[in-house]
Length: 207
Image 1 (cartoon, rainbow, N blue to C red):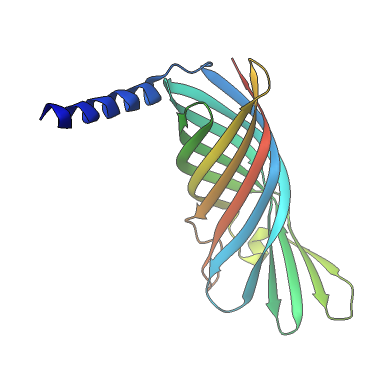
Image 2 (image 1 turned 180 degrees about the vertical axis):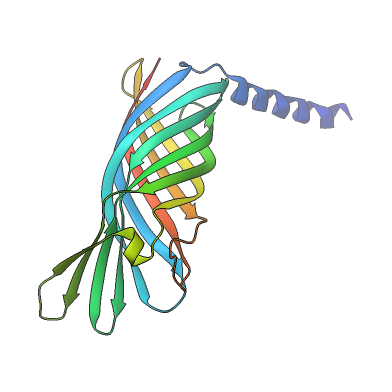
């Protein structure tokens, strides 16, 4: 019995040290840039394909427990996608400000896992470039109301981030996120929910 309990006790102690190890900083600020690769889960009326768009923003993580933090941010990450229909390609960009709130578990000060939610607000107009074989693109700008598209979105965020120290107060961060939209963005007869893969990189400073 003692032989069985000893490995359990050692494992429990190791997990305790892993999650209760004191982190260096109580508040961490990150400035990041990167890309957003958006696809849609939609009714099969049109042929959608994902496109990449670039953006950036800022994140702040507040320590709740020694190795657990709550991260809040503001990210400008446009959504870009292409619709093909009747020989025409419509490349559409929707600018958005996304507010993610992520509960993050920091492991060994090397990487972290996060899960949470987000809300976003689309800004400006919908920019669409229309092309057909043998012709150049023709721009079309539309407002959200006439286009019958929602001006807001919300959903779930999952994240895995990796860190590399560059000084006692700063470290490089690489953050891969998968975003699952929960809101139907199309106000007409179609269903349109977004799935985003985001890759962010930048510098994190701890206080």
